[in-house]
Image (tube, rainbow over all chains, first blue to last red; front, side, top):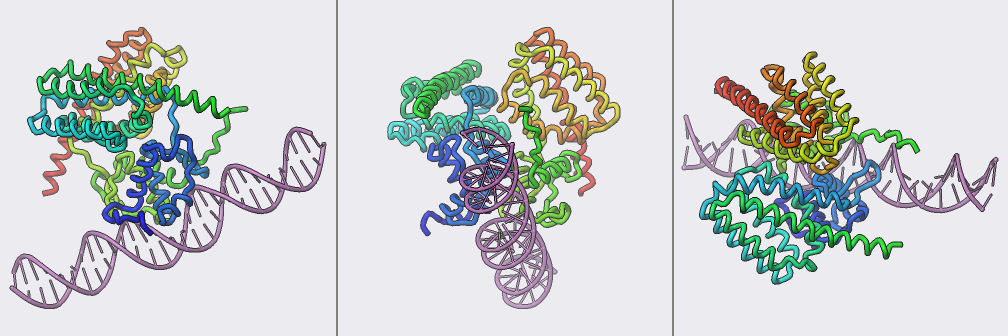
Length: 229
Length: 229
DNA sequence: CATTTGCATTTTGGATACAAATATCCGCCC
DNA sequence: GGGCGGATATTTGTATCCAAAATGCAAATG
């Protein structure tokens, strides 16, 4: 069997969870879709047990919803929940950024710079999945100096959710140039130690993404609704 | 249709997870302690499988740490991490409170009032476990009007962690009267719609708890250290 | 003809059994 | 005498099997 790809260092449930996560984030598994354990087990050529643990993990991450004897569904967020996700990102990220800026060193700046370039490259190449990962890494690098592992972990969870919707619509988002500029500007303000301006820009950046995305998701759902009936 | 009389008896893993959670929060399972699946399975008179799922869930909640073939350990936070936990609470709770206050209705206030009384009663009765639950419920009730389920969920996770340390030291905390007053004051400010003052007080309240607790935990660890060597 | 009840199928939940991985301990070599 | 390596024992991870729960369908009854 191919696809087995000895990730042997990672436990089987974790490997499966990673793959499922990617499938959900990429939209391969759609919102609301029910997941049958047995089918997955067959797909991955393992028994249902590791699949169950993987699902449990994703449930904890909020990507799927596990009901008692009724299996797993890919979570579907309401528009207001999607908005909330971005508000949470804004809240957590500005807090991190505010703490990080005074602690940032040259190597932090260098790493951010590097990620920024990779991110722009992946964007130009239309590699959505890679862009999503890099976008998270870039934001993460901005906050690394804050040295706040728990907050970062929380942010990671939240970002997983927002990534789903960003990636779903990245191709049609008109934010190309503005976002690119904003990302650079964030770094510049951080270098200059302009804490409050930097946080304000970050907040605006996330807020703008939120507004754009909400409009796109709303439109998409409206059209799906229209087809559905 | 009358709201579906929730017969939803919780699944075995959930039940086990609840009990384990309580044991960890109450300090019955100490920090750093290793947990053996088989021992637990025997305790609860079930197979190891539901135990595994329960542990996985607690791992996701951050109460235990699961290493590959080396089993589970009760997580032990550094002092700075404990501080971070309280900072997170402060961040999330002020955000919720700020959003909630303008939306609060008479029934919200009434519910808060009621919980406040129960909380004080349980405190007087030295019922630490009950106090912990009520304290969370009270804070939760203050934020219910914000209608932010995801933020609440995140807060719940974070609060689980802080509860551990609060309950560990509640008996020796000298915050009895000040805290009681602050809790009442929070409600009064909310009633009066004094958003910023209320949030400032909330932040100060959590900050004070943090400082007190950090001192107590530091002292406890120092003495344990001294005995240990 | 509609509604309800019972049966069958499907799907998840849990237990036992077996395999893999890790830690421990003893003997051996340096 | 101390450190290293291998065998054993303990513990975790995975698979298969059986039981219980839910859904859908069909038949019977009003």
